[in-house]
Amino acid sequence: MTNFWLAIDHADDALFRTSDSSDIRSELLDLVAHTPGWGIVVRPTQGHGDVRRELACAGLPDIDAVDDLVVPERSTDAVKVGFDDHRAECASMALAILDRLPSYDRVFLEPYCTTPGCLDDLAVLGARSRCGGIVLKLKVNDEGLAAIERAEIGDAPWVARSDGMGWDDFSGRLPRVRTLGARGVMVGRAVWGDTGEAGQDVRLKTIRERMHTIERAFA
Image 1 (cartoon, rainbow, N blue to C red):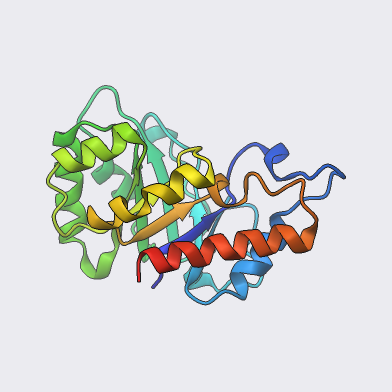
Image 2: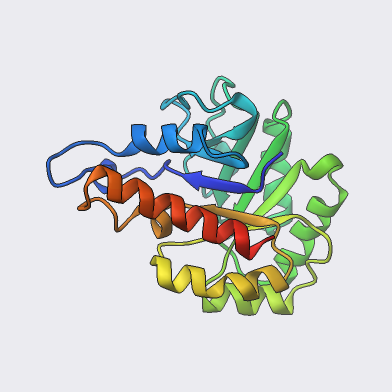
């Protein structure tokens, strides 16, 4: 069961295009399939290539209400849901989401709220889950780190999300993220977002080195 995830589920296909219009997602799938300890986050309709099912996570579209949740035919052992409920407490919405996703081995909950009280309640859900079945995906920009420090996360499993940051910014935060108790990362553009203009060999070498940097930060 991994806590290192490379995310390629972003809705904007243009982010994955190189200057010659080739798509780097197949390269990233192959890279993860041959990198021990890493999993891949994909859109439910994408497929996960040669990545084993237990190392694949379906990244569902973000929702504002539980009724917006579309549960796909299960093809992965993990699923990720981003949510922001402006009308009720995050924990109530999280429970409703979990009720609709009972068959998954792991559910990654990605709250866009940074209210410490909500993070406290979500952490309780995570800490009570069996075998790390509920994992929080938390943003680690300045606002996110401040909220995590104020909240009582305790032993609840959580991973850091890059939230549109560049590699230098994100990687520079990893020591603090580790100290705050993160188990790993679920990271996308911070790792691959600026590599599209490089040749394939350079691109894959850069991404692979960044993945290894993340591993070392959590060693």
